[in-house]
Each structure stands twice: as structure tokens, then as C-alpha cells.
Image (tube, rainbow, N blue to C red; front, side):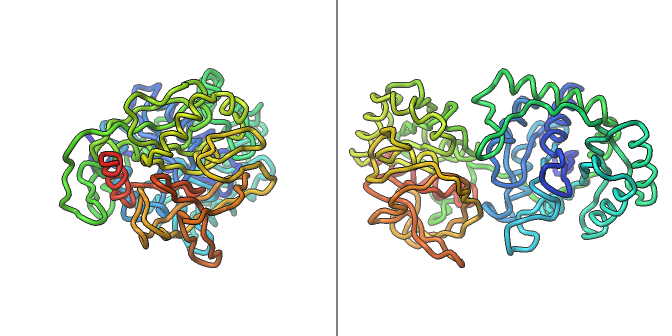
Length: 461
């Protein structure tokens, strides 16, 4: 049973590349090996790290994003994920104080730590410094007095003498050193154009990598001291209650109830479509749907009785040839879309619905082509629904995130999905018949009416 005082730690760093993922994932696995039920969380919109967290803990990895969901939902979503757990570990994003561009602390690891009332463990890459580490840590400790840095883990330590110098320097700061990881061969976690390779694409190797992370952390960190630090977290500030999809009101009608038949909604999965938030499936189920997963790489038919389709993010560009070769499924998707059935596609799903991707035929639902580029498109977006669709009524506002190295031409249909607000004003995406396709990743917990609207359209289409 979850309590507002669930022991918890936030693993942060001065910058990206310091070793947060290795330490956080290894710590999760090490705690789990000690018999603790561990709740894994990730700050920000990242889909890939939570897959490694899930391997480490045996529980669903969940995101805490104060931009996509709003600061008010961070603690409730955390408590929802932490049900039945003994301890929670939250992996930060970028540097401790880095958040949404131009938005101050919004969506930063520091903000999430404050919203959770959680102590922070700072992972420092010490490979090219000795006494200077004290100045660095002092700066992060004193920058925001509301952020409680409860300990430091030194990463990439060169030798016993190097560790001794680092520890001596940090004595003056008054922050305990809770671990020192020696410089060694990096744990095998291959990356490509959008970060780590997802677990679903390398499961056996990923299991081995997580095991190595656990061994590294167990050998180099003071696990009892880290657990004791987690237990110093008091009640979650503000008296937050766990988020519950069953009680999430619709955007338009808070008193709406779930009635009628349970439409079957097919959700794309498998190695090519690994990007999804667990809350989406929970919301669809709570809204009255039967959710069934299928793999576009292997399944030649949609699940029998499919009334609606959700195709999230992932890496279709890596599997373009295989997806194209599965012609029976491509035709089934096109026929479903042509019938007017609700189809929600985000990023990878958008590419899959195009006429072609890097020259390989795709579903042909949209009169558009997609191709890989060298340019990375990355960032949070404020969006407004241009017209009515299966996901939103015209004028509805949503926050989203873009993360891709592809381009779709044209970038928007005759009826666009979203208008992007702010300095970068544009329209993007496609709405046609029951299809809503866009590059924008959204988190439906911020607007539960999205799931209810989609399920109702599946029920009546």
C-alpha cells in the first residue's frame, strides 16, 4: 500500500553524460536484489530509460514531467506508480537545474525533487578533477536551498589516491560521499540517433547490462546509507493523493460515466514502436476499452474486432524494410483508417501512416512521404487543436514534446492536427476521417478527456 511518506531518492547530476542512468538503474537493481520492491521513475519525456528501469525492478517505468502534465500532477503520478513499493528511485534529466528552455525551473530535476520532497543524490564525473569537485558540489548544494542534496556519488574515479583526494576535498562541503565508482570499461548500453537502443530491441543484452550496472553500484556505493537517506523523506508536500485513472474527470464533463460496449483498441508494440506512457493504456481501459497489443513487424492482421488503433512512437526508420515487407498488415491498417475508425498516431505512428518512409512503402493512409535527416528536432511544444478530431475538440490546448530526426512532406494536411504556439508559430499533423496523426508526443494524464473521447469514438464509429 502506498503512503505519502514512501522512501525516495532523486538521482541527479551537474550535466548530461555524468552517469545518471548507470547509477540510477544500477541502484534500482541493487535495491531490488536486497528484497525491496522498487518503484522506478524518470524525470522528463524520455521513453527509453524507463525500459531499463523496468528490467531493473520488475515494475513499469513511469515518467514525471512537470511540463507535459503540470507540476500539480507530479506527486499524484509518483504515488500512483509507487503503490505497493518499499522505496522509489527517480532518475533525473540533464543537469539538476536544467528545465524547459526559457521556463526557469519548470520540468527540471530540481523542481521534481521539490515537488516530491525527496533528497537528491548528485552523481559527479570526477575523471578530470580533484579538489575542484568541492567547488562544483558546493555550487549545486547552495544554488537553491529548497533542494536538499543529501549525498554525492563520485563516478569515473581513477585510483584509490584519486578517491582519497576527492573525499578530502568534499569534507569541507558537508555533503557525505555515498559511493565512488572506478573508471572502467563502460557498461554496454549502445546508442544511436535518438539515445540508447530500447530494451525491446536487445532484451538479452539489456538484461546483462542492467546486471552489470547493479554489480557496479553494489560494489562502489554504500547501499545501507542510500536507503537510510531515502527514508529521511517525509510526507509528499501538499497532501497529494495517488492519481487514479478511474477517477479522472473528462475535460468536458466531470460527471461522465463509462457505459456501453467495450470497444477493442489495438496498440502498436514490438521493437519498432516502443514509445508509450503506461498511463495511456490505463486511461483507455478505465474509459471502457479493451486494449490489445500487436507487433507491426510480425503480425499480419490487426487483432480481431479492432475498433480503434493507437500507434505511438519508436523507430520505424530502423525497421522500414521489415515494416514495408508486412504488406498484409499495411493494407489492414489502411482499410481500418478508410472505414473511418479512430486512429491516433504519434511520431513513429505518423511515419508508418505515410505513403513511404525512406523510399519503402508504408500504409499510405496519408498523402505524405517521410525521410531521415541529419537535423534533430527536439523540444517542448504548446499546441492547440486546429479542428475537431478523435482526440480533441477544436481549440483544446495540449502540451507536447517533439524528438525526431525525420521530416514529413508536407508537414501538415488540409486539416492540420495542431497549431504550435509561441515563437515558432506553425501548423503540423493531419486530421482526416478518424485519423489524428502528428509528430507531437502528448501525455494523456494531463487531459483525461482525450482517452474518453477516443474510446467513445471507437464505440460509436
